[in-house]
Length: 419
Image (cartoon, rainbow, N blue to C red; front, side, top):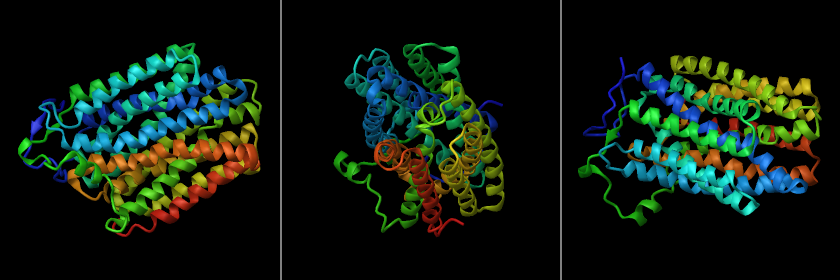
């Protein structure tokens, strides 16, 4: 039975959900997130590195780092602000859906700019526009989890949402390396993917309407100041955020430079095909880790033990590439990293939704969580640029990835209110 699609006013839109969500709703959220990650990660994984090499082959790593770094700063600023705005939106179409589809449409303009960029400045501008639009969509879609999914079902649904990142990335890699030739076609595919996914979710699922009578009445300045979450007042949120940030930094260091690693270190004859194989292995392992772990975690009510397992697997994958830099070991590392990230994808997000400071500001607070997804896009290129140029190359880069990832486990074990 399909869910109703009309926006529905409710007395308290921030009350904890108690009714389990249906498979239909989960499938539509899955599709929307796959489209989002197709559009967000495929450029980082394939299109932007190729465009950087076309515009400046001698300094491709530097160009790639600058473009993605500036774009990630835009992302870090937009996500909590868009989340805050959706928390306060009183549209008759709902408070999340307008941001879901609006961000997708805005990002398509950025993809058009990227497709026609003839220099690094225009390329940077286009990517910033893409990041702004996609992160508005991300803020709204992420809030759907605590808005609609009860805690006892949350890790299972979070696991399904978590695997959308790698499935979207894998689908995008297949499309832009095997089915579509050229940067322009690749960027067009990204725009279509996010719009179609967002549109299906918005049209086919309900959204709650925030009654104007209970909407926040504070000034814009006060609302912007309220974006800050005090670590002293909310220590569990701070520890969980810091741990999540370290996981994302470690994962970014592990995968963002994989195409360059396969080209310049492993020296594969066809690095594009090698990237596709590695990402396929990674995706398969993420799928297994996320789906299995989500069910186990919900059944036991425990989150932290699974986080420890996840970071040990992810850190171990990076250690493999420190010791052996061969194609065979790269495939093993891809499987290990994927399994670890899959385990973390289900329990990490579920844990974070359980330590949010305020139900009335879910999207804003999850926007702050999403900063820990976007800031690694700034940190990783900066760290990688320094390490690759001055501190020992890719062995040192993967050593840093291992250390940062293992640190995440230490930080998350400091959370007290979630087992």
